[in-house]
Length: 540
Image (tube, helix red, strand yellow):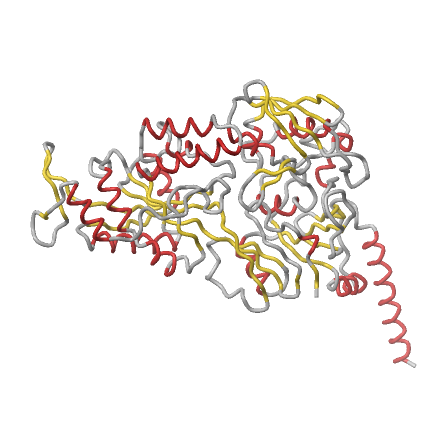
């Protein structure tokens, strides 16, 4: 009898716990609600494992895509929101919500027609007023916002017809079309609320393949497949997005099977074994590594010396031994896959004899004493090939690449050492010009513009490079409007870069989308949208 009473008490406790947790679960769809952790929720999670995809992102301080400042959050929001103008796999702006366009008023005003039949998730139509509202909202974002560079180019926008809008830019510029790659938000949904404080920033109304379901701060964002006006309804019904603290946490979570997808950059490719029970899909990122010069150094301002250095950099050895083939050899800072890249032949291949000939041409023919670097005599005195490659110590691949470059240069008469310093000191010394050579990398914008780095007086022109020819080529590209004009101007800009060598390009790094091997139907990810085509994914 005592055993029977105990059993009944246990059963009562179990059923009471299930009922309480079920109430919590059904009321947990509101923004910011807490999800119950009882037996019912555990059963639901087990059931959902067959229909849900598990992803990750950092902490979201807003789910308003125009105010968001975090790249991984933007990656997830692209599943909810469509961009006004999209970017294809070659980095080219292509129609999306914007169906077609043409310039007027000296190429400062872009007249855009909106595709008809597009709707928000509540069924209301996407209108030109939503475009104007989104642009005005975008201009409220901070400089650290994901789409801040877009806001900085747009002066104003106005509705000009039932399906048309006119967008005025501050200046006529070839890259202005890239400024329209931001997502749209619904004017009617926000209804005149203050965007900075609106609670709807955490309950987004989107228009893409997944709709918002619930958000639990610091824990989880849940999405649900939805019918939409852009593509087919996704095969995978639910998406659960965990909030993680870092990229390292994402790697660990993927290895342990806690998330199904991982977008990895060059810092983790090859460093851990992600191939077991997974598939990878590579794409070339806009991350460009290069060797930079201090042009105030009289030796490095000599083009023959810079060309000699370019020939002496063992790019293939660096790609194979340092980047583990997870990079694409490159010279100019234009993605090798870019629609504007007309150059596919290497100008400065690894050739030590060509390097020696160029040094001799520059007057570096002998050393003052045996075992010392080559030198030359000038009116100012003796100049020697003695340099230091500045590198930040946290980037182990960069340190290894610098060591290989130094070894190769030293084999032809240089005396080059590698100086590893903390990142804070590294950036301070670049800004102060306290270096001779430095190994660096740029995360380039989708808007290809060499002016940020090579234009006379540019903020990121750390080596104080100055060239009237380069300034003219940069200006000509900015004034080129239309695909043909842009391609031709970019070709001339690349030729100027290769002729003047303000940098020696090394590589564009590869990224990859790693997926649980139970996922099929995957297309090719892109730098702009690594989760592109997720509506076609299937869970086997």
